[in-house]
Image 1: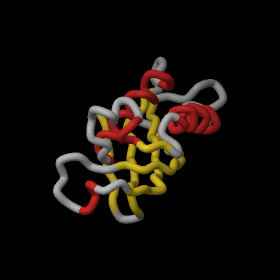
Image 2: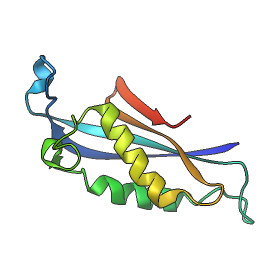
Image 3: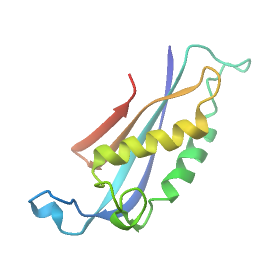
Length: 123
């Protein structure tokens, strides 16, 4: 299995509901997002998918979050905007747009800080 990875980022504020700690207050992060795409084969040019395409689609998805107050942005107006839920949401959006044939989004990792991240995969 071949796996590619790109890194992107966005800046956004959030507050955690029902948390009981200081993160219940509105605060912001410079989020780092790692996107992993896999395939058992390459195309005739020897690529799984062009890195440029993964980055383009990822940046389109992240535009929906960038410089937003996540708690006021769907689906996080109802779902707690945790790193876990954000990773799940990004995975779903990217899968809709990138999955085709043998190419599949395999996982998404969202870094809230330099030392804390959440990963979502369906494996």
